[in-house]
Amino acid sequence: MQPRNEANLCASRDPEEELERKESEPDPWVIFRRHFEAQFKPLPTLEAKNLQVVLHDDFDQSCNIEDESEWDGFSDEEAAVQVVEHTETKAQLTKMSQAELKYFMSSKPPQGGPTAPISKSIIDDQNDLSEAANLRKDIALQRLLNESHLINSIQNSTISGKNRHKATDLRLRALGSKTSILNQKNMPLSHRKGIDAKNKERETKRKKEARENGIILEKATFGGKKTFEKRRDRGIGAPSVGIFSRGTLRLSEKDIKGVEGSHRSRPGGKKRYRK
Image 1: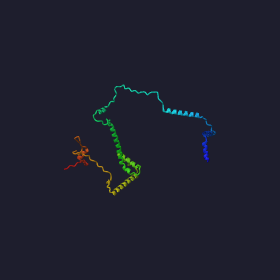
Image 2: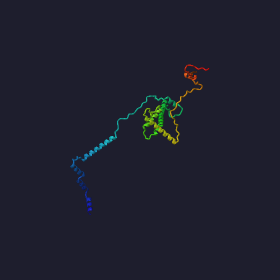
Image 3: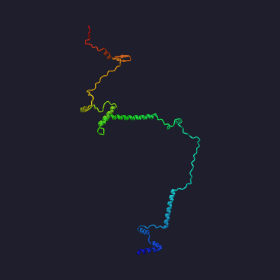
């Protein structure tokens, strides 16, 4: 029964009494302000009307600034009209070259316009450059083929000094060197004997491997090569004695003695006659 009585009391209250009760109660913002002023400095008081005027002025200024940034207004200056005058009666035409005029007046259908002829000097220069490049490549390939046996004998990736000297010797021989840089004229006798023994051992090993594999090698030659004096080749019908030149036969003393024979004289100066 008590909740019903409280509801009846609330309903019986007048709205004016309710408004007076609310005004008599303290505002929470006022309570907070009093507490803040007790701890810190007091806040400046502004009246409600002045606050509304300040806020209204700030709003008007911001609106004016935005309007000025977006709209510049109309300008009093009018755009000037650009006038172009043509006083010359005859227009200057670009002159055609003789080749273009001939191509234009010809009865043949167009084929993309006349092309500028390529000068012969440019073609010759290009050919010379290509020939020089091909020559360098040929020389490099020839060196690679000549020195390939040195590369095959190398086990490591780096070239040893011995193989490098051999490659240099091959290049010098190709350029026309008569003697090898590996041959030494003056050296100790013990070194010379060691080199000869190593060469003989290498040659015997090569012959043994060839014999086992059934390979026929060249015949061994002992001693140096014999040189024979070549006789001068005479033409057919030419004299075997002397030199025949300009219709005359020229005989030297050696040729005359060879024809007559040598006369041996005996000591004492006496001659023997046949009876």
